[in-house]
Length: 331
Image (cartoon, rainbow, N blue to C red; front, side):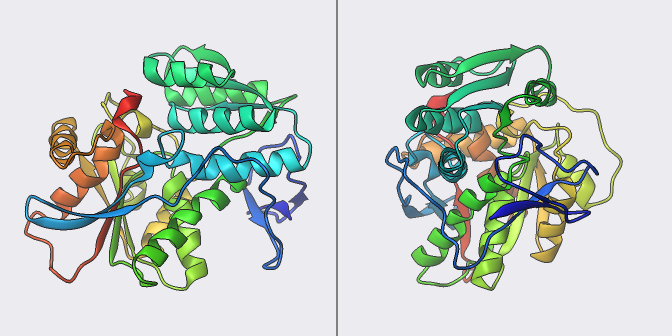
């Protein structure tokens, strides 16, 4: 098992302190089909329920990712990433995040006995900071945007392993498990649509590579805030707009490093990108709450996108999956 550059194909061990190739290319993971991941660290991760719901006369399946031990789907990627790093002897890591990835990686790092430092943009929700602190991680707050926090973490990674949920392919190897669970829970059938909030694309790319292995793709519909929508602009080849504020802080990413990869996955699945306003996503969050489910604002983005996409009505035979990516307790 090793990393290789998507551009020049140069190989790197997964213990490398480099987070991308010297040529500038991003890493992909090579793993033999018979090669198994080592998982010795667990904090109680589960196969999350798939719940049928009828909201606004639209029947959907809600994938309950907020029930993972750290409260979001990011635990899937952290589980695989940290287990492999422990296996190759990594003792200290840095990570940057708007909250959910950092909490997941900090939790698994604590369970693995790995020292963890987390770079967060100022304004990160207090609940997320408190959760990260509870795992013993060192918190470094960075003035400015989510992208600024990433720059600070990469500077710190010159001498420490960068356990990035964006740059490190092991994280996507973990989020692939979501595709297999959905496939199994749908009686080994592939749904017609999966809507998801998209920032750096860790769910989108994990689902894409998982369903590629399964052998058939659903249509992936990426949903972004209309105030921060680089994937929408990239998908439709539109000029970049200035980043604005949004209550969906988890997807307020202005320059996602894997943008071309995300756009490729969306086109290959014959999918689409939808943007929603804060007003639309707050309405969606309220409607999810009226089902007895407490989802964070970023998680509600996907349902807001589905409401907008199927404004004229969803065909009855379309099976639509909406992952609830994070708990409302993470405000």
